[in-house]
Length: 212
Image (cartoon, rainbow, N blue to C red; front, top):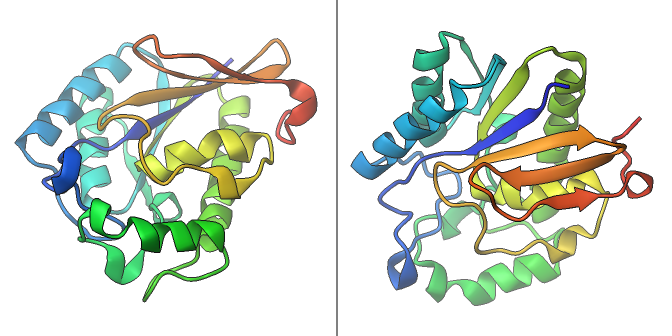
């Protein structure tokens, strides 16, 4: 059965680890040299599989990553703003460790919009709708579907699959830049795994609204 392949975009200058990491949000920051190499490496891995379509967030860092995949698969890219991350408004560009209290407030009240941005629920609903469409497409396809997106989207995916509590999605951590995450249905349940042997997250069929 065809699978959905989620790809986190490559590294940017704002993706540095530790205290210097800055929140990206909708800032249209491009990949740095490391990120461009990550995109090429990710593309080579994906080229080993049968891919039918490539979807991507329309932000430049995702588009550059999708372009690397397009070049090796010779498939067009379908950009969509629905695969964008959470619009954190004026918090974007700030060091993460200086705005943790602001992020905590937005996490505790997911209907509260970020300053000049959107609420977490608005982001979650937007991405949920697109994810379900992509899963449906993958279920009908003989080839895998690729979606290049952002870390917050990848973090939200397991909760969306089981219709879980979206207030418990972490605001930090998640798949590394350039990561490949497989979303697949096997034996009556969803499974989510990273490409390089990460822990398999299996979701029982009776808990998932997306198995029909």
